[in-house]
Amino acid sequence: MKKNMNRRSFIATGTKAGISAGLMAAGFPAFAGNNRIAFQPIGYTQQPLPYAYNALEPAIDGTTMNIHYTKHAAGYTKNLADACLAEKVDTSVTSLEQLLRGISKYSAKMRNNGGGHYNHEFFWQCMQPSSSEPGGTLLQSIQRSFGSLEAMKNQFTDAGKNRFGSGWAWLIMTPDRSLAIGSTPNQDNPLMDISDIKGTPLLALDVWEHAYYLNYQNRRADYINNWWKLVNWNFVQQNCNNA
Image (cartoon, rainbow, N blue to C red; front, top):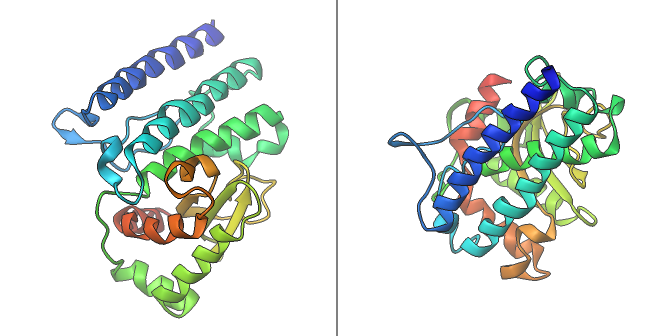
């Protein structure tokens, strides 16, 4: 009975996400009532983007965002649902963060798709159509950990640029409440108990080729440099506060 309820829950939410994706494909951004969706807690289902596909241009083109969201990210969400059903995860009891923190107990399918879903849902919220500079306690934490905002950006850029193959760059808060930067391969993330870097994600950058190749081809460094113009520092500050 519980398995059927989980399946119905995934299907129902997936349908809503599909409707939202269809609206955005037609040129309409996703809304919750009259307000854009923002700062969504990350669960097991794909949420609508908080902006239109073309809202991040010219740094990230609309075609790339459309394919990235409706094909790559949606595929991770679907496969995560299948893995949860097969491995009898009660998603009403076990949060996605809890699952990822104990990912070593699950299959490779769960690891790849649980990470892929979480990472993308987090990544969308790391960006907005126009960026500003961080301030307040976030800037103070950055300065304490890295010396300056510019030094943090340079170290983060290097983490993304030098990640061999596919993966992610991360700004995290470590258990001792300092900030650190690192990268993870494939769809791993710092929440996972198998990760080489561990902590609470504050900011993430997708450096898989499908995130940038249509516009930048092999120029990952150009993609990263332009991506800084999109960073949603309010989201980073919120993550820092919550951590």
